[in-house]
Length: 331
Image (cartoon, rainbow, N blue to C red):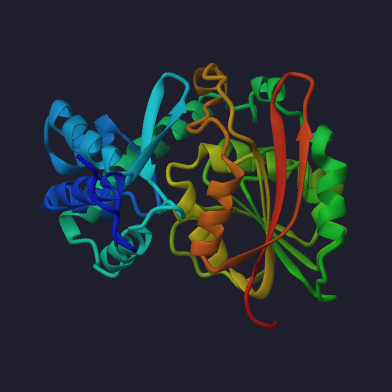
């Protein structure tokens, strides 16, 4: 008995199996809402269960169905696993279907209860970080130096900033200046410097640093950079080793982009993704570094264009990434 010939353009079994898994995963409203929630953030299974008000076991089932269809993937943060949306597989016959689904879902606004539930999870994350730093009234805990002392990346960071085409009267915002160690360098390069920190103890140390150095062009403000603020648009925004303390990194990049003038630059110093979970308790980190592709994707979603970058391996096994992103448009 001979087998039937394959017709030109016919799909093999694997392709139709992929479509069946895709249709199963997307044929459920809750699973579609999970994909909407994962648009620009990653969440643990317990966080997702909290957002949707269901048991962990039920959420795990839905995530497994989505994973089998290639719609979500995982990344490990120490002992925790976080779920995020998967990019469409370029080799898949159904890639355009995948991309169209996510695009159409993203066009739907989140309803108020869902947005509030997400905000509550972000608030819980942020509270963990605030409680950690509130314990150190004398400034940044020395444990931070166990990861990456500022002196290790100061010169490359300055070289990156000096390579930017900035106007003579440029304004820079530094988010999370800590004890203010970088403010003298910024004050010598920019006409005006705004330092934003939501930790009073940290801001007090930064103000003291500015007073001792006689920095008349620096204003230290007790403020949350992610909240609405009446501030002038900046030519440059600098964020050094702060993003891994923020509850929603992708949202943070969106807020940073909004604070820039057209043509302005975001300069970001961060840890590359790592598996040293001890930094959560010792240094108050919410995230174990970031994958370069995730940062690039979040920046692109915020309307930023990737520019210069530099990667530095440290002797303690950590790796630092310096990234510059430009906001589209002319000054």
